[in-house]
Amino acid sequence: MKTIKLYSALVFLILIFQNSYSQPVVIQRQNMNANNINAIFQNTGIFNQNTALQNQPGFEWPKGSGLHAIFTTGINLAAYVNGQFRMASGSFRGEYSPGIVSNGMYATNSTLKIYSIKAGDNASNNPDYANWHLMIPYGAPYDDVNMNGAFEIDIDKPGVKNSGQTMFVSLTDANTFQHSTGEGFGGGTSPLFAQIAFIAFSFNTPGLENAQFVVCHVINKSNTSWDSLHFSIFCDPDLGDALDDYIGCDTIRQLGYCYNADNNDADYGVAPPAVGITLLRSMVNRSVSQFDTLGMTSFVQTNNSSSVPCENDPVGEQLGAYNLMKGYKKDMSPWINPTSGEQTKFVYSGDPATNNGWVEAKGSRQNCGGTSGTTIAVNPPGDRRFIMSSGAGNFKMSPNEKQTVIFAQHIARGSSNLNSVTRLKNESSTIRSLFNLITLNFSVGINNISSEIPNSFILNQNYPNPFNPATKICFAIPKSDFVNLKVYDITGKEISSLVNQQLQAGTYEVNFDASNLASGVYYYKLTSGNFSEVKKMMFVK
Image 1 (spheres, rainbow, N blue to C red):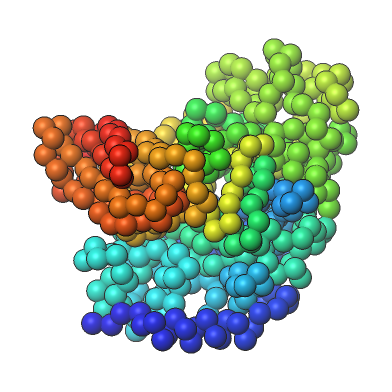
Image 2: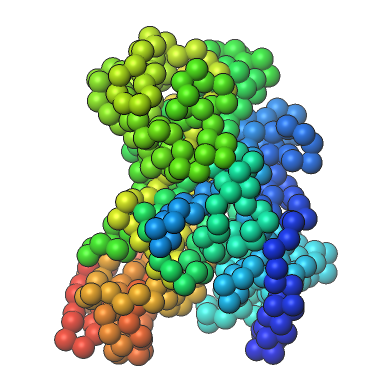
């Protein structure tokens, strides 16, 4: 049996420290193509773009067809640090680098790269599989076969359990060389010093064959809190012919999508597909007395040729990009629903198939500098970009705190351009349901997600709930004490002891796997000193 040894980790850290400086990134790309989608992922925080060829899309569907539905996608973080605005941008270039933050500096070496493994790989036929253990300390997922909370090379399996393919890269925005006003979406600020365990994976499971998943474990590696934090997904969804697109969102499903404005696309032909991104897990605001799962807090648009200045791409416009992430136009003008006259942070939230609510076919308000402006009866089709965000003005992320965002990019084709939207929405619901069936070993045992001392004991509702078969339980303790967290069935019989040890003040997250239990209601109880609280959860097979 081989296990990761302490001296190996120390040698690895020494190698990293010897390479700590800002530097240009050697671009690395990997294809995620284990199911019907072939998408390119890059080590700068962007994906779905083929930067090896100038101005080329990188989300091909169906795989091998030469047809593309997305030009580029990227992850974005923005917040204030001691009153100074900072951003880590991802759209067309990406301000991230492979590496970590060490002692307040960018640190990297040749082992910090994109790792990609597929079902059937082993240590003999794939070096990434053989070296996966090097990335375990930085959040690389694995199947903990013997469930002992430690990765053992000869026993445990690298990657997300049962996936057709898993990628991992440790990213950071600490490399100042990567920050540029030419990124495409804001860009060019000082670093946040974020470190992100970036995981992408896909399945061939029926219902998931047209979907890919992305997990971002975001850690504040600076020594200062991030205030007014927002996480955003920027997407330029060129659906075949890029000049005849419409976009929309479904706030219930937390889905943003793109569809063809008519029923005939120059590339995909008649009944073109619809493509979208479903937010499966958002950040949790622990700055409030009771934890607040933020969800999708806004969905807005931008483009590169609008006659409305405050809706154009915020290239080098840092605060303009941040305003879009907050759900406004670049100049802080509100988005106006022309069908109701109301201000909104969710553009085109109606249903194109039924024509209910605000859809692009019902036009838009061209307002900058306030609420007044020309109302367009029907939007002309064109090249769209959308920004879906999760954040809040009172959202503070403390040093060493970790937040997790999970989303799926997926595509569906129906009997018409509008029926494809309906199919995509149904697929979104299926993906969410099936995703809850997957045991994701992204964290093992007790995970300290924030060392900031809370004001009181907090036992949060488990998530997801209902669940099958795994769920997470989050709790906070205001002082160092012995903590006990147990699970009971409906008769009061103890099922599992999840925590039974001394813990320091902070916020913690624990996995609970009910694979061997029957469906039904279960209770979990947190006890520490004189504090005791019980909550109910539902396991549904």
